[in-house]
Amino acid sequence: MEKIKDVNWQEEIRRMIIERVREEAKRRLLEDARELRSRMKSSGVTEMIREDRDAR
Image (cartoon, rainbow, N blue to C red; front, side, top):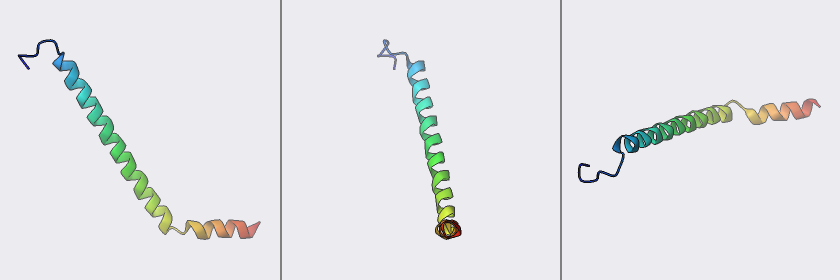
């Protein structure tokens, strides 16, 4: 780093940290969405839709 003086290392590190935090937030949201989806499948969504359609 000492040999490369024209790089703002503080800013580079800040950008890398921000990007890493964004990636982790996306990963957690995706994990939560997958969990919700798996619970929806097991809750009988298709049966609920069929009941609603039959009630019309």
